[in-house]
Image (cartoon, rainbow, N blue to C red; front, side, top):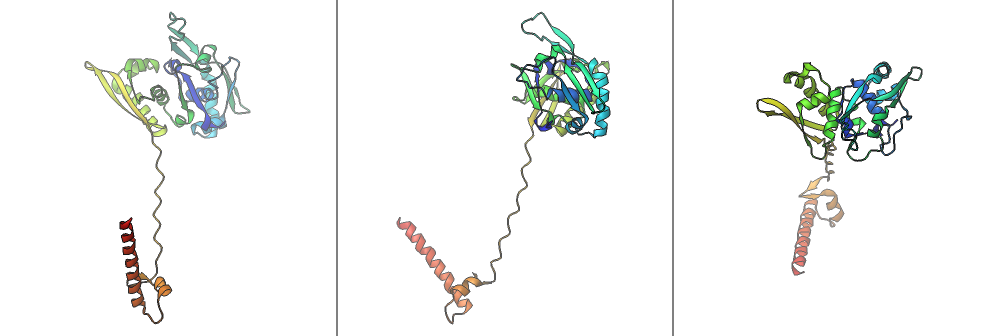
Length: 292
């Protein structure tokens, strides 16, 4: 698995779904989505494998740690669900669906890998994608350590072409499935927004800034502005030192004097004559230019 080539493609319905995954559950889901061919139909029988070695490479952790973390994910990921809002345009009365992320998951201890299948309801939102979906490289979130950073990064990538997005705070809390301990704005900022922004700025390909917007006296919205980081320019090559011209006599290099000196002519006299000849040649060139 070449992690440089893994691309995440999700329908925007999934990016804006309500769900909560641990950091490593999020990583496993993304690593498997990265293996999906978004231009082909995804089948319920399609299996996706992830080894501890690849997990360690993708997410910059030690291989020993990757083994234990994959075992933990194998125990819990099957229980995780997500809520899709207005999932089927052909059935507008269907306002939401709650579904599991996966239909099965297994751990192979001898091989140090997990194997999973995505659930039936989520298949159309990962394969044969048309219309509104978001695409980004897995490596751009691979070093993140805050699960909220990954979620926020995806929400911003939906608006990548505009470089700005405003979201309602209550909506964001609902989609992140935050409990009542985040009701106070100070807690929400300190435990979700600020760590997420810091993680994105340090470990992704984008820089993000944010500000609050009030409705009346209450802070109701967050506005994010973001731009892709520019590659560092290559270090400027130091200008080459000019080569030594050799010893100068009256403004003329000694080697040139020796090449042009006449019999019996001193170095000083030869230097003066050479300078006069050069000056005369320059004047002749100027006169020739004037006549043309």
